[in-house]
Length: 217
Image 1 (spheres, rainbow, N blue to C red):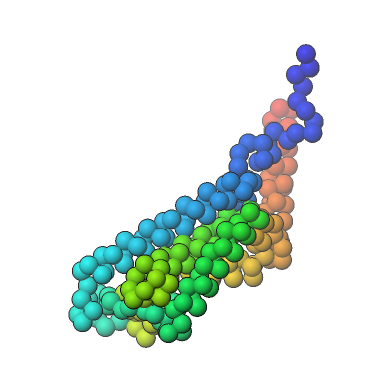
Image 2: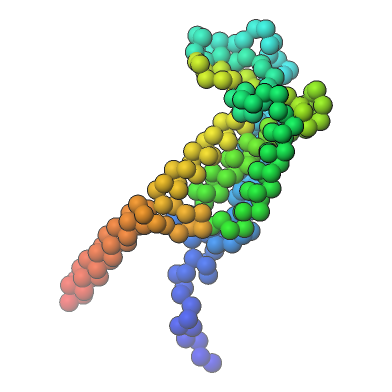
């Protein structure tokens, strides 16, 4: 029986050894969906928990000063979008949030970059977190007011979901500008850096092999 390895298979191929490859490239849609769900659920859990605590213990008329007047906790019911924008268009914002959630879930099958999954997971979790408020809070389903409670200087009052959406969006913009593509490939600056590291690794391997040969000789 011929036990020689199949020359068509690379024993070091990440696709043969696991779901994830080096450099954070996800190999299967299952891994993408699992990671996306975990990130989103963490954001949602933090958002729901903090909002519940704020509603239960914070008086809207008595803000809590964390760092003087620069950082305070104050309960605000927001009928608009993130950071109190577009007030009065709650039902429209609800539909937009639903559309964002659907688009991210449908797009997830094409993702292979772990960093893109992180960014979209933050956006997804934040969108669902505020969507829960719009569906279940007063004054009515699909028109509920979002609970905001963090006030920093002149910045509009926000919550955990708002922060997740903004951080995720910023991360996606940075990844795009640097050339880290959603499918795990790299272009521009990112491709140049990857080539530089590969060249350094190749030189190191050659030096190691040369040293080994000299020692054996």
